[in-house]
Image (tube, rainbow, N blue to C red; front, side):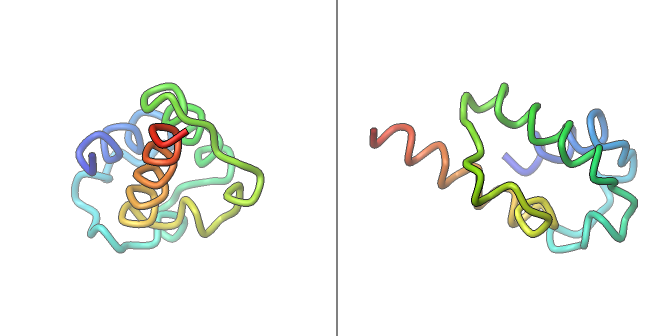
Length: 82
């Protein structure tokens, strides 16, 4: 999943260096904008057939590749359990 997230970061969040970033690197410090994070969120929702609830629509949810992966994994698991 981290490879997919990196590809999406490059394509939708204007982070062409995403492949070289550490999993725990601050994506905003690396250059991701709030607009980029929204584009990334939409791509994640489409790709994984999930919806981010309002309580996860915050800067922290999209701050690192590790956190994005954990969040998406939880949302996918929640969808499958429903």
